[in-house]
Length: 399
Image 1 (spheres, rainbow, N blue to C red):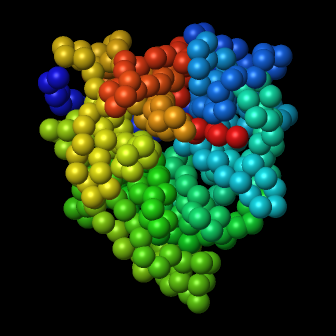
Image 2 (cartoon, helix red, strand yellow):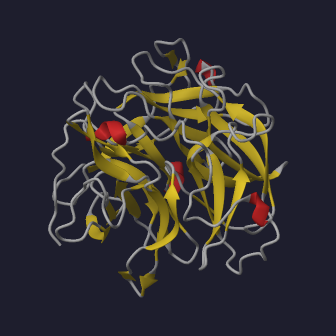
């Protein structure tokens, strides 16, 4: 297949206009319905795919007919108990509280500011899930950032959480952040230490071997730092004080460490279609999948940065237009226990803003899809839900 380059100067700006959408919050005409489907028999598959869309949190069964449940309803539809959910979703088992997950939560922003909600999860299958918020992570944000946008998450082996927020999304110096948070998390004031405060459009996180933190940066920053996939490792802080390894402060006065090594492992590449790195997920062969949202590509790499293959790209002759790519524009990605690759297609299209071409998510043009493999060969994507508003993140839950 031939490669294509998007001649859109501000394409990076589209990446997270999605997180804090003003969508009406419903699940989407093409998706199975919502919490009203609580009587649906549990899915046979042990895994479920969670995705934030239209500020709802929706869970999908991983096999056809891809039954769905709205696990959390947005605050517009449920002013009393609703929460506005988005971004990457990460699960873990807390020794005290059991099953937990983190997701972007920006209900009522800017007061309170956007952050990451901490939730307890009950249930094992689509139709039975219940989520209860028990805490929230809210940092300070850098001056010059667009409206604060939460996105990436990960959980280290000792239970420490790592998050990324986007920062400025198109031009500017790079104000995205990478932050460590220290347990316990069942509270609304959680101590933290920032690892980086100068990222160009920070996106997904993957916690790799030896607790190395991998981060996608969709564009270059003004300090000549290029876009790509970065790895952070070394002696990580154990708390927010100098004695615990957090030896400095940032421009907002928040704790910051200067002792963590940052390395560009996978640079952006037009040859490989990796123009705007966004989603990260581990491949079954011990490598890494990386999505590039505006070019419609998912590629596989080894952990030394070597390109392995393209798993998803637009068909020959397909161009990004008012209908988007037929195979979608993958932002968040995740991998199931059987190796199936799932992606949140945020539904990027090219429109016309008063005679000026514009690029960004369309009106309910998003979808959630999966790629299965026949042996080692990726198959054509299957749609699990479509007609969605701003599906931007994926989390794979395995009971």
